[in-house]
Structure formats: structure tokens, C-alpha cells
Image (tube, rainbow, N blue to C red; front, side):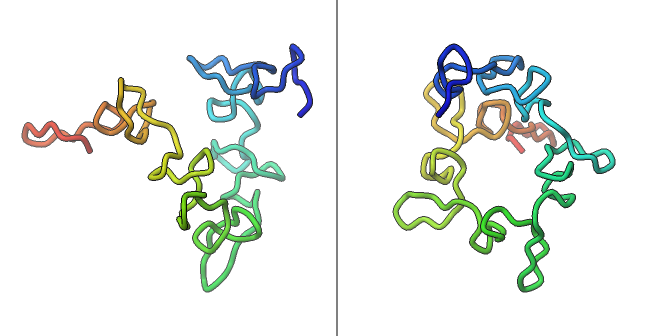
Length: 147
């Protein structure tokens, strides 16, 4: 890889980091990583998704349509939707599920883990699993379960 700044590639400390909270991802534009508002947005009315190509997000025509057996989903890779063979598969044994991150499906160790001390559950939102506040509270007749 070529050095981005300080003689380092982005994955090793080079480049400019996102200014959102404690984010360590590289800036796309406006001082922010694409998931925090950086990068171009879809030009379709009121859509806030990131542009895939031609100024449009994947849902509004920025990716190739995949049509097989009446399926109207958008293609992910190789002209195929994930449910029909597109996307990257988990490298764990004979798993056929789509990769979340690190080459693995979330049930096999891919994806982010809860930031609560010693918790190994999958993140639901805000860096927390559903038990530690990463989901909405369910409020009915004094019930304190999570939604």
C-alpha cells in the first residue's frame, strides 16, 4: 500500500481521522467518516444514504439491479444479491452466511462486540448489546425487559 501521511498507510496510523466522538476511522470528507456524515449523499429526494455510483445510493439506482425468479433486490457482488450467492461468505468451516467483518459472520466472531466490561455479545447499537442498553426499553405494565 502507498503511504497516506506521516509515511504511514491509513490502517497503521496515517491519514486523517474522523472527528466524531472517539471514532478512529479515516475521513471521507468534511472531517467525518462516511458513517458519521462524511462523503456524498444520494441525490434522490430526502435520501440520506451514501452514494454508490452515479450520484445515487444502491437502492435508488447506484448499483446494478438483480432480477432472478422475481427477486427485486439490488446486486451486492458478481451481479448477485446476497441471498442468491452475492457478497462474501463466512470463512468458518462450511458456513454459508454473509460476512459481518473480519471474514466472519457475527455468530462466528465477526462484527463488533459490546463495550461493556467482559461482555462478548454482538453490538445492537451505540456500541452496546441489547442487555447493556443497545436496544430500546420496552415499557408496558411495569415490564423492564428490552425490546
